[in-house]
Structures are given as structure tokens and as C-alpha cells.
Image (cartoon, rainbow, N blue to C red; front, side):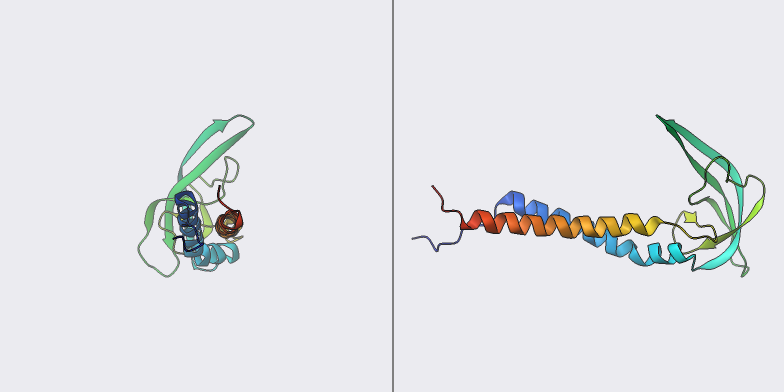
Length: 146
């Protein structure tokens, strides 16, 4: 005999796992994104050494690589990039203030960043996807089979 409840479809399980992964990745980056938005971290100096640009239809995307030297005398970091710079704002061979918020390969300008918007979007997307998957499964569970 049937218990009256159907099993959770495999597609719903996969959607829930994807939703959990997206939320997990977003929450894991939330602290660093908030620190970057506020430019809270170790102050230092960035010296640009290389500008890599790629042309896309309608715009250009550039990455400003260089060396970060912390003000507290810690070890300098080479081959990091200064987040949010373009061809006009990359300080090649010049010192510019920067903040290290703990990201492995990038530092930020003292004005902070809008990176938190993407992090918040990831978390909201994951929560929304998970809610949608649960709701669609529950609605399908109420529909009589056959």
C-alpha cells in the first residue's frame, strides 16, 4: 500500500543542492565583501607593474597587476591586482593607497568596492532557488497522480 506521500524527485534534490552550494559560497564570501565595501583592512601601497585589457563588444575590461606593500612592514605581495581599476585609473609605476582585506590575489582602493552587491545577489539567488524548488515539489506532491 502507498503511504500517501511521494518521494522527492531527483531534479528537486539537485536544485536544492545547487541552491545550498550557491548560498554557502555567498555566505563564505560575505565577511570579505563587507570589509572590501568599507575598505577595512591593512593599509598599504600598491605599485602597478602591468595592465592586461580585453576588448568586449561595447566595452573594455582591464586588470591592473602589481605589488602591494603593507604599511606595517609586513611582507610585500607580488602579482596581485588592484580591484576595480581600468586603463585610466591603473597607476603603472606609481604608488597609490590600497587596502588588503584578506583576499588571496587582490587588494582594494581606499574608496572600497561594490563587490558586496554580487555576494548579496548570490545569497538571494540561492535562497530563492531553494524556496522555488521546495514550493514546486510541495505543489506537485498535492496533485493526485494518474
